[in-house]
Image 1 (cartoon, rainbow, N blue to C red):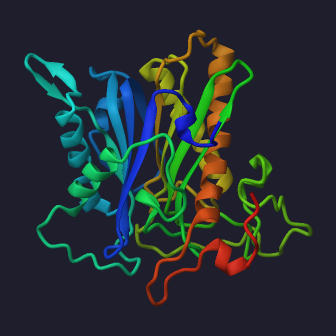
Image 2 (image 1 turned 45 degrees about the vertical axis):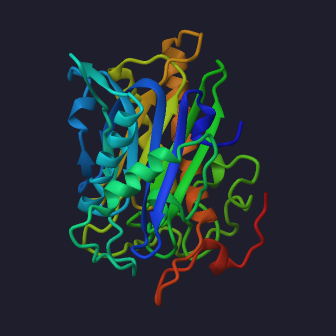
Image 3 (image 1 turned 90 degrees about the vertical axis):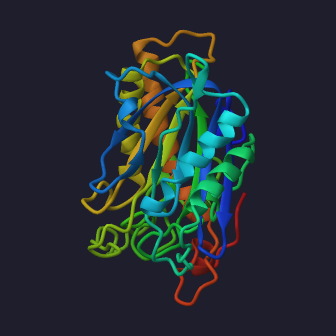
Length: 333
């Protein structure tokens, strides 16, 4: 286990970014089409081709899922992933044509100091293509891919991942780009809200603060504009239906609420995709499916903390500090 979503057999992840615009794309490619659904709990989502993920819709499998920076412009990135998949012969067959199915979501990173004057050139289309072409079992965390330009209210955000195994042997993983309206840490201190779920000191091993800081529950957000959004994918090797995958996505949102304060706000676009590869030889019982959802929420909470913990600051005047730089703590592995 690499503690990455790619511990789930049958999927790969690739990143691409542009340092000048301070934004990027992350593509998750399935080796074979996977069942997928979605749960949208934020008030300002940026989405493409997600209506087909609802349980009553006809197409029941996807070839890839995409997380992107760039807000509305970032939705071009799914086109680049589609182009890559078509070149390698992937897609939903319609007579002699194959149409790759690639839903995705974008976060708002247009005010992070990067040069967003990219003109007519569909820069995110190219980043999507590059991310798909780079897909592998290992990938970077922190300031990478869709998390390259992400921020929280007071620290640099980023790209995170985590994985776990249920008691029944099912593998579960999470992948997230953290661009939150609020905080991943407790007050002004270094401790993460996700601390109770941490495994193997994956984000510093600090645990919870003692004594509890006076500002722990203070309300603090970036501002009133919808310039946020935490977007994520959870995946399992269990065989699930679209309806069961949607329930998995709903349960996984608990992990977002555990790791970010506040979350699911009117100016957030908090969205989670859930995918099931069905590669496990074991049939999941109703209890297994409940544990898979519980495990997914824990993985997502951990992945959110890892995203912030692993991030490095952007090289622009006034850019937010990273967790590492602000708290000047040695990285513990």
